[in-house]
Structures are given as C-alpha cells and as structure tokens.
Length: 261
Image (cartoon, rainbow, N blue to C red; front, side, top):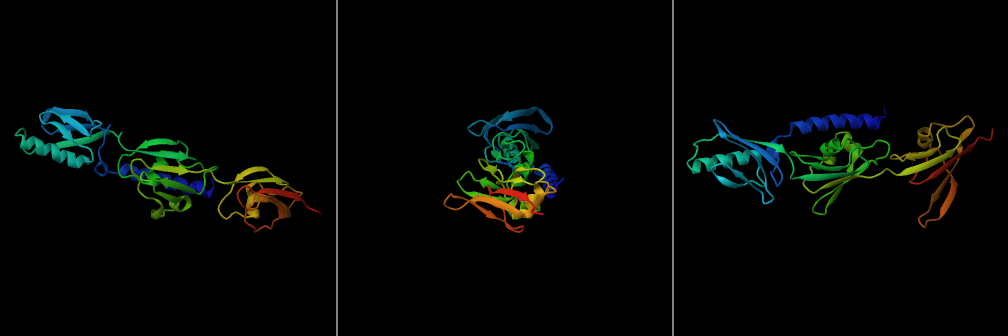
C-alpha cells in the first residue's frame, strides 16, 4: 500500500466517524424530507410526515405547519407551542426524527469510486462527501479537487493537504454544490524500463522517480541516455536529453535508451 492510499484511508475513517457524530440539529429541513413526529404520552398524535414542495407538513390537531429551514429542535418547539396555544396539550414534549434526508443534495464527480448525487444529512464537509463517494481513485485522481459552489464561486482543494489533516482544505458544503476530482495528468515512458506505458504524473516528479514508477531500468537501460519528447508553448514537438533531477511535465514522452557499455 503506497503512502498516498494509506493517508487517504486514515482520513476516510476520520471522516466517517465525524459524519456519524453530526447531530440532526445541524440540518435544515426542506422539501422531500420524511419526518417521524411523536408526542410523549399521546400515541394517537404519532405521525410520519413528508415535507411538501411548498415546505409544509400537516400535523394532527394543528393542521399545516411551515417547516422549511427549521432544525428538528426548532420544529419540536414550534409544534409544542402550537399545541399549547391551541389549548390541546400543555407543556407537550415533542420529538422529531428525520427518517429520510431528501431535500439537500451535493454532487461528487470525477475520479472517485462512486460518483453521483448525495443527500446532506447534517453539517457536511468536503472530506465527508469524498468518504460517501467511496474515496478518490488512487491511480487516476489528480492531487487536487475543485469545489464548485451553487452561487458560482469555486475553491481548489489540495487533496494531499486535506488527507494530511489541513482544516483549511476541508470547507463545509451546501445544497447545490459540486465536488469534482479531475483525472491526474499523465506521462509516458518507453524503452529500457521494466514496465513501459502511461503513468500518473505526481507532484514535483523527476526523471528518476518516473523510472522508478515504471519498475526501474532493465539490465541494459541507462538513465543518463533518456530522451524526452514534449511540446513547446507554440505546440511544436521537441526532442531533448533530460537529467535525473529534471522535472517531468504533463504528456511528456520519455524514451530510455540502452547503455553504451
């Protein structure tokens, strides 16, 4: 298991634990949410109520109640107040549980195990959503994600810093936001290496690390005789020698030649 995957698994476990700890009181009710409402000592008032598109529910004795934007705690207080003001029950003890979270959604796209839409079930952050999506794809994901806000704003998330515990890279998300994990840039390596092919370009990758990623040199290979093909800003393809400590760029094509001796 490589260091990046190990770090991600630790962060994933922490996110799952944090998600379980989120209180329903952090969640704001909206259309589609299904609620289970009970009143202590009054079993006949127990009801399941789904929030309508207009943001209302219907409750026995008091009729229609506006709930959109309320927390469960606020709704408990509101129903108890209406029961008392209507002279139905004095000091009612009301309990509201969310059975289905349906009103607030965030999309996770790109290089994750399970891309799609996810329902928010409380105060939720980027790491929580990546955990719900099964984690980033270690072999194909870039080292960053982009959080696209529903109001048109955006934020680049440094995934390595996020998995390392940097709280500034773990902002909260809201209804309508989208998290996109793009595909990592690639480089290509051929010639006298053990496993020629395309590989994920990691941050600050050098020629030596690129050769290591491809399984190392064959018995005939020479790192000092490596050529790189890359395009200049004008789009022209150039071929040049490259040293062990030189940085690899996106879409570079490396050719490791045989040793002269």
